[in-house]
Length: 423
Image (tube, rainbow, N blue to C red; front, side, top):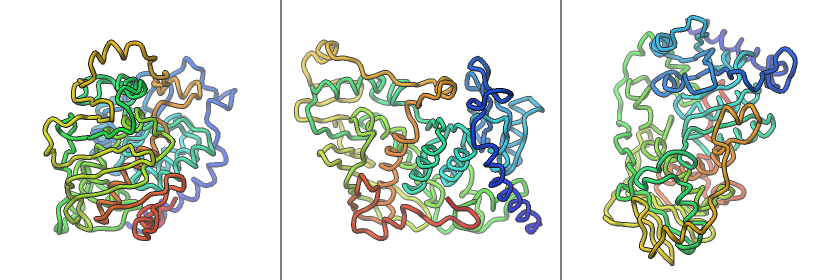
């Protein structure tokens, strides 16, 4: 059985290379028979139809035409929800990204697949909607950015707080916070503290279990394909599906799960979309080699002195969310600046952003949270995870995107993928 499965995958891998020459240009630039009129619905294929994937079948202006999962139970639940026998069901993502009828590929798998799938979908000329975190490593993020730059794909990372909805405990949209920061009323540099006291929950229940007993792989799951590029580890149900977040091979615990939701808006209102912190300091218990644990404090510092502090303990009750030399901003958008709201009204609003993904795809305009700024905020998350995993503070070259004088940290930039997978 294994020999048959391997042969099939090798066939797909070879055919993918050949098909790339024919599929590399998206339909919307071809004209003629393949042309997608602006009024038409875009089509999408969803890779990973567990709870997150099934929650994205119906976003406006699109139609799901194909789904892919390595668990036949997920496929069955998805088809029941879709109620459409015309939707293609696939077990290998490489088949889905070859489909000429698919405009958008939605990646809703565990993070250890995000980089590889996004880069391959880009090379096949697809536009991409990817769940957070964007990639599990900094090196994979670089490869995704390179692939999209070469092909001109439209990319969306699925965390929306920089442009939509009230931002957790702040109870206002992020553009209000950015307007305050841009006004200069808080001064500069700024320290941003992300804590339960400022309205954020690090979800430390996403920790792994040590010394997992070996279990039999359920018949409905292709566990080898679920692992994909990750190192082989014997099957245990706690490794897969919703609890995968607690293991270094697939995600990064509470920081990996929630980090981009919390940090990307900070990067935006600090105007740091084009740079990364230059140091990361960590205070945490020693981490297990397989299972992700908790941490007490992680601090990122930029070249200009701005800081992002991740407070895991939540000891400091009443701390400000943003603290500057001229003022402080607290949970609920409350400040110690006299008459802040009246003063703020005299300043201009932040520049508008492209926040409609369907419109971005049709008009070829860069989406508000794209591969470039998404890579930068994901880099902050992965800097923190690298320091946590190694148990020490690190220096980082923001331009070269490498750690300074730390060979072990740089080995975690581009972690080897299990064959035959590679980027």
